[in-house]
Image (tube, rainbow, N blue to C red; front, side, top):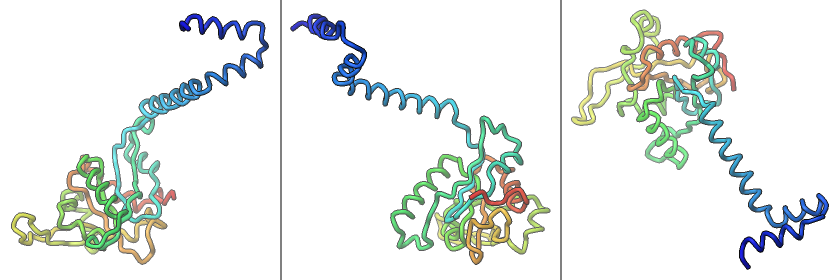
Length: 230
């Protein structure tokens, strides 16, 4: 039967029928198409919403093995960013065991995630327990804190600086000692984020695009406004 004749036949069946019959008929023959259109509309709306309303992350702190995070909104105010278009991210979605030679699948996945954000230059600082942090001291991930902290701050934290002699990956020889991290275990902004007996190391991601914000974040961790939000 030609398509046009089939359509006419379907219309004839509906002629003089009530609304309930028409609705039942429509649902029986077109429910799959209707559901597909609805789901497609929802998916399209989700994409449009994510594009239109997404914010640009202007600062990211990688927080390994952290149970909570400092106050992101408060730090956004410190940076005086446009919070309608920009945001900061304190990402505590990283879990890693300290023994990288016998790591589990979750550790491996988070190692890959960390390398991805570093390669994309979206990460600015790293906070991690010392036993995890030290796995990155010879990898070129963390930079010399003298490049990010001013002299006054370096003098103020000199007793908490962690010095390390990085190994040259090409020669295997030790290089001059540098302040690779600073102990921030006593920072008010990290209260509840790590265990009370955990030594937390703060380091600067070497290829951060916001070198001048590293010290500002460090200072923020010691401010009353930084209290944990989770």
